[in-house]
Image (tube, rainbow, N blue to C red):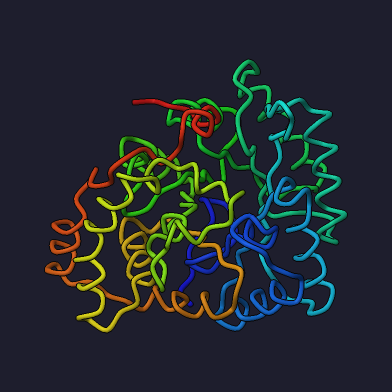
Length: 327
């Protein structure tokens, strides 16, 4: 597994990380043993950057990771998050007392005294980001976090935060079919020496093998509310992606591996974090860093899946309320 720097002053990590939201059952039923096998497979493939959150299953994801670390003593780079308060109503809280309390809970579940990266999972709009960064700098000084990150923010918010203290990483949804970060955020990260961490780099399973079938999703799976996966948009999107799947097959590459290789090709500061529940799915894309595109490959991917090809929004109105919009 190739390595990349997690921010200008951060540690080196695997070029592809592992998003651990699936361990909480968000994308279908799972169990601890299956999650532990997935984590073991990740480490075997050289993946040592794990991304989780306090709200993934009310701490369930963090607890699974903590169990894995206790059993294996594996050396990994840990990122977790706080700032979302699940309701009802759902809200965002970046107050110092809240962030401290949630971080302490995360550390306990993970079984560590420090996490390498601590994200503000969503920004609390009414609270100045400069104040929030002040809290995070205090946590750094106390040795509880190695650096801080921001999630789903605008380039302007990143610049304001970075002016107080350098930001280690920003994560946002980014994939072949969700391209908004190209409108300033990826560029701002490169300029400031901040890592850009694409989440949902496989488009919530759309670029998985086998292909996603929305009709097979559990009734409470939140993806059922994503406009792109609802008819008539879904049929249009499936038809648009079919030639890309044929392109991958013609070259002997798996679809998820190509989707991740494309992200890695967008800049040396990108570190995608695909998520999965199983070791088998992980194996299908773990070697994405070994794919080398020719100029012709890049041109063909751009022709098959041009910017803005997707039909429908990536979030419905309720889901989009948590995202900073800047264009």
